[in-house]
Structure formats: C-alpha cells, structure tokens
Amino acid sequence: MNGDGTIDIEQNKANVIAFYKKMFNDCLPREAVARYVGDDYIQHNPHVESGKAGFIAYFERMAQERKRVEMQRVIAEGNLVVVHCRQDWPGSDDYAAIDIFRCDKGGKIVEQWDVLQVLPKASANANGMF
Image (tube, rainbow, N blue to C red; front, top):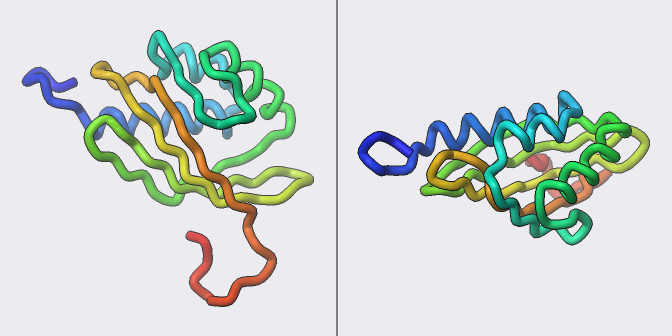
C-alpha cells in the first residue's frame, strides 16, 4: 500500500512476477511462499490444497518435473494481478495459462485462481495463443 493508503498496483505486479519466477523457473516454491505470500493463502485450483503447506507440497513435486513458464503479459487492477503465460511441461502437453492473484494491503499474495488450456497442435486461425 502506498503512504496515502492506496493500493500499490506496480508493487503488486512486481511481487507476483517475482513469485511466479521463483516458484516455477527457479523451482523454489518454499522460498517463493516465504517471501511473497501472506499469512493466509486461499487456493482455487482443485488439484492443490488450500494453504501454504498444500501449495508448497504440490509445487515441490512439480519442481522435479522442471516445468518452465514464460510470461506473455501481466495486468493489474486494484488488488488483483493477472498473468497470461505459456507453461512448458517436459514430457507432457504445454499449456496457455491465466493465473489471477489477489494481494493484501501489504502486497503479499493471499489468493489464487487459474485456468489452463492445452496448446493445440492445429488451429482454425493463424493468431496463436499469445
């Protein structure tokens, strides 16, 4: 939050970007949570338990697969930050993903939603997913 009590959108974006990079590309979810997640963490992905411990357990397993994420765009409004990215999963399908993060007044991540779509082999148009 800025000194005048308003939400610091740019700081929220920077925190989410750093969290994402540390969690996925550096394969350090425990460190990402320690630095960028608030006291309470609400998870909406049905494959991941809500709370910090559930998140860390899931993404430590995922880190062994060496998944890589390439952010295409980051959009923020109020206390929400949206990341549109390409997720490369070695030995599996690659995905287009949208992650929505809610940040608390201090810029810490406290809630997350995601939507994933397998990148198709063919498309009815030449526009691409990104």
